[in-house]
Image (cartoon, rainbow, N blue to C red; front, side, top):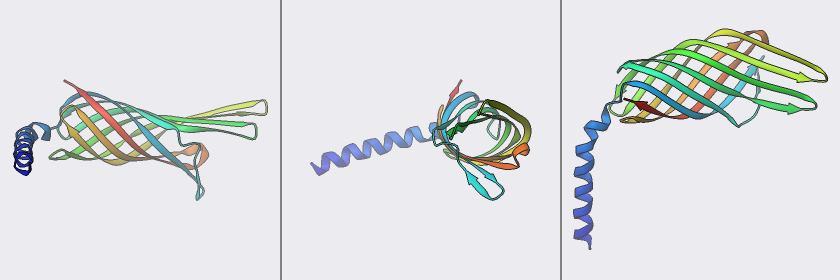
Length: 176
């Protein structure tokens, strides 16, 4: 039985070794993705979290191994407390510089975020939005067209004097 297991393990290892060079290179082209996010608002040294059920949608284009252009919709969360409702989101457009090491991508992003905060309650509603610079960094794993990434991104919501810090875990798929 041990001999059979060793033979199967050897075949599996040789099969993976044959596929590994193909999986090492990320696919370039148009990609889509989605993920879950955890967002904290740092307003005057106080961390505020609206909720834990926020998400991110990703659309990007990677024309070269080291360069991508990406747009994201980020649900920053919402909360309803004591008759007051708050809902926050952002759309970001960024350039990504990537360093590819085998199946691992290390990247930095820089761009602009259009944030929006809607507040309503007690018969009054208000909406604030603005464009602000954004930057971040991440690490991704890719297996051909399928990828997974962990990313940190930040920008400032100027009217509220709050730093918006988002951590996301996402999956992507590249179309050839």
